[in-house]
Length: 243
Ligand code: ZN
Image (cartoon, rainbow, N blue to C red):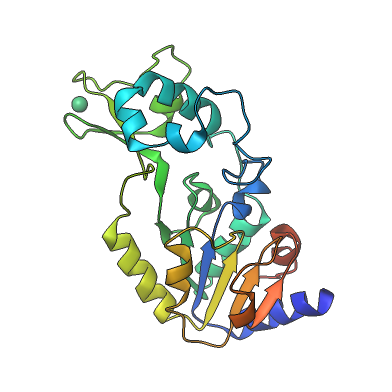
């Protein structure tokens, strides 16, 4: 394992155009539960399964129930970036890392200082009135007041800018992600099982010879990767010395 991490550090040192593609596993070390893992958000107290509660239809028809779940489970304001978020921000600042592509909606990459973050599934930090389009921060939505459904000053319902089930992804984010991956000399894919689209199809755009997969479990892409590390992300990124 140590040899693999040394190889990872070597790859990072010799690369000038790194792209990072991350999933839920990047944030679990900050304490944020993984949606899809067995010990994640599933198997819990709610009347409906999370996949249903986080769907567009459910938001429209059961807005109060949606927000009860959303405020309890998806409030990332109380969490802090971990060593992986921090090292990625440092690599960007040094000019070595060009983009972070993430499936997470928690905003922790930005909190760590990353600038070019391509959020495939949106962000809890952005919220808009469905009536007039006015922007609201996460504090408004997760705030302590007893407003069950966050409302705009115009009376309209506020909707988080996150991609719910049944909703399409933002094409411009997809195109930017493809462009970043095509131009990368090193692609790090971490904390994702790669079973959710468009993750697995995006990776196909990488043409280099430094594809690194860091994940707790094996993935279907292990065979095409140049380096596979089944180790905690914190342990791997903790070995990077960025000066
Ligand atoms: Zn409004």
